[in-house]
Length: 485
Ligand code: GLN
Image (cartoon, rainbow, N blue to C red; front, side, top):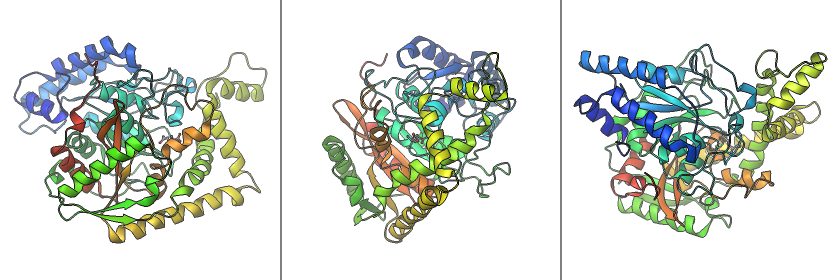
């Protein structure tokens, strides 16, 4: 049963080959039996899941046209608030936080009848590219347990890769959907900024954060995204656009598709095996009729430096609410108010989060704001303009998702800059607010490689279609880690 796609689960639920309660129980048990190996979940919610599954079964029996995901079990990244279910954001700070409400994303899945199995592990406050910063321990890559799954949505990625769950939500501020999707050999999409509501999603860097989905293939990702993406008046940056059924946009030939290959994405930092797999994937796209164009995104080298000013600046203000009074962990027996603030924050946050708060506070402080924050925003504008210019010539931009396959634990632990360079190909799409996805396109040393597709604003449908066409003619997305039981 674990090898079924979401599309197949939907079909079998309709045909009554199994009930939602049966498939929910199956996956809960599978997680309980296997997740010690991966540590991909922080919390499971068996009782709630079974109640939701029972309701879904009743709807499936009573309704002539239940919503597509009715009865389908999924997991949420532990960054989305879930009513009455602990939401930690991977941090000691929120170790005991039980939200009184659901994030809009969670609500959208619940009202479609999907079943929540639990909450997935992640880098603390979504800061990281390896899942090593989680207070709840690192997540292991199902393809090689000595290696990282990527981050920050490593729990969701590993859970889907190990087939512990058919699909999961995730978030992407600088690559946290695409990079772990690439490293775990699954499909992930980050939509256009504003397409999915951020309400109830714990904020890291608000002008960059965007929620999306992870699944085994583009068809499943389309099903999930169609349910997830909606306008939300509670999020002022949510775009007022009608819902879309992305599943209906998957049958277009790509013979007219113009794909741009940015020369900056094939620089000397790119692993040779990764480059080969990506080049072969591009050839497969051209065999399907797509036409390649050499393009340039000249400000690519400035994306990582600009991001590491803007994201920490925004995180330093967003995380100021966690002070032990308004939100979060409170230290024992404080001497006075200042001691309470200092020790609560000192104990509640891990090293990477503290580093970002320090950098961000510095960049925003008077006298430095113009030199750093304003400058970074100006650079961001140039990066966006590169894409606007490129999309005059091409419909989609294609390249690697990450510079190399999954690395070993500790490999970049002492060197934050080496870790930050993991996102060198993913960050620009966040700075520009563009939709982008990663799909599996090969193995190097038995570890997956991701192909990145970046689309124009609100072109999620064409991205998913191109990915689906690729997946109809290749089988990388069906491969699983060797020792999967
Ligand atoms: N790895 C990047 C960071 O640490 C991106 C994280 C994310 O997208 N949430 O900031």
